[in-house]
Length: 529
Image (cartoon, rainbow, N blue to C red):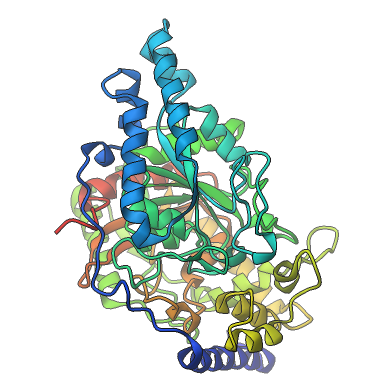
């Protein structure tokens, strides 16, 4: 199993492009030191330390008012957002009005708590929303300068369903430009910081969500994921996130829209600090399609088959998995075997070595009618002519480009694509798909690193742009996966692991999230000593 000469040339070209970008960026980029050594203030309000499930119950029972809860989160956002730049537009006044209406509804309800729980399971609970989702009355730009001033006139379906369940949106959070990078930075809103270390990335493209949730500025949020955009922000910020089986949660009314075969790889899903909120959020967000999942099934983890995959086999495009991440994944294995009496089998798939090439190939495949996906350079240039990435690079060097270096890099990488799809890569993916599907069946899960390293410093992904391959390959395989925090490492940064199951077996990974939260402690307050 080897690359052809043409494919080797493409790998060399990709690495050469990133080396050039590294040199240019080091020479031309500004230095950021204003936040050096600073950290977030600790959480002081106990309401911020309750899950959405617990908050909803307390609100229904009138043990706390929705206004108190919403105000607590507004206060926290106002405290931490100057450090994070996570919330890019708030709706605090409207949220407080809606919370007051909730409290009035509860006072007037005659059917009792059970009726409210069944009809409005998240009644009065605050919610944050990724800015690439349509949230009526809020900006809907995805960080593209040419979309500045665009305001959503409707709600995206998952947002509408959460609102219908009683959740109250507080505002929208930052993304990477056009949602195609794993650092949340754009020319409209600027750069978002990691909640545990302000000089590091929060991930992307749902990085504003990850940062805000990690900082206890929100309790539940909404993300989307086509290459790890839920999982990387959750990993870097020490929270939980779930990439659903594709086509379960609607991806309509997001920007940019998918094209080609990308709808097969894009998933919307919940992000939260507490594992018990994942399943009820998914049940709500999926709407009638929740019936396709076995979310009401009680999972006996002792009857689940467990596997662990420690790394991708050593792809030269990707940073080797760090020792502390290899160690923490082994600790998960040890706990599973000791606590549940199961045997965790280590497996390797040689095809994972080509994870980036598989993701990259499948993202540009045409749809059933033969129509290819919209080029990234066209999206960059909308509503006008396509952007010319090399010209934008030259403009960036003198501070005149409306695009981030990351978007320019994506545009340049796009230019390295050959005109023909590699049969070798297609065969690799089909073989990997068959092997993984057979391995997992309906009762198996495997552990896989979330990323090769803990949260990198700002802009460092430009120099290791293919490290997202650990998450991206799961999108192409169409599998459900839950990102689970596993405490913090040597530098005080979150550790974690991906838990992957077979298609439509989302309930297995959600059950594992509950187990891992109990075993490893779940989310930690980044401001605590």
